[in-house]
Each structure stands twice: as C-alpha cells, then as structure tokens.
Length: 93
Image (cartoon, rainbow, N blue to C red):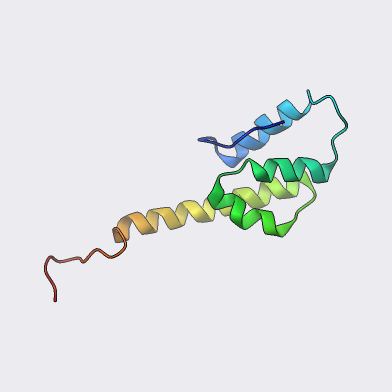
C-alpha cells in the first residue's frame, strides 16, 4: 500500500488512508498503519513525526495535525521576512 499526502491536509490524508486501508487484503497492525502513514507524509511533517515512534494511529494523526499547524505558521513568518540573505531597505553597507 502506497499513499502520499501530496496537496492534502493531514486530516484529508488520514481519512483517505483509513478508507484505503480497509481494502488491504492482509491483517494490519496499528504499528504498521502508523509506519505507512508517517512514510507518506510531506517531508516537513515526516522529519518531525517519525522520531516520535507513535504506534497508535489516532494519536499519530493528531500529532501530525499539530505539526502541520505549527509548520504552517512558520511558513507565513518566513514569507513575511523575505528570502534568506536579502537586505531590506536597499543598499546598506
């Protein structure tokens, strides 16, 4: 089973993952679901969530939502600050 988050929110990705997992032909453990779900997350979320080694699927989805919310806030801050290395106010030396 391979599913990636892509442009979906964590909530949408979690619902889609659970829906598709119902059709998987082999028995699925919570730990396996967590591993596969985390592997399909966007890199920014995966690098934070994977080291937590959460083995309960609902708890993992909730943690990923929190990280997504926090990462979203950081992105807005970076966009306002401007690109790294840029100087505001023209030629300052």
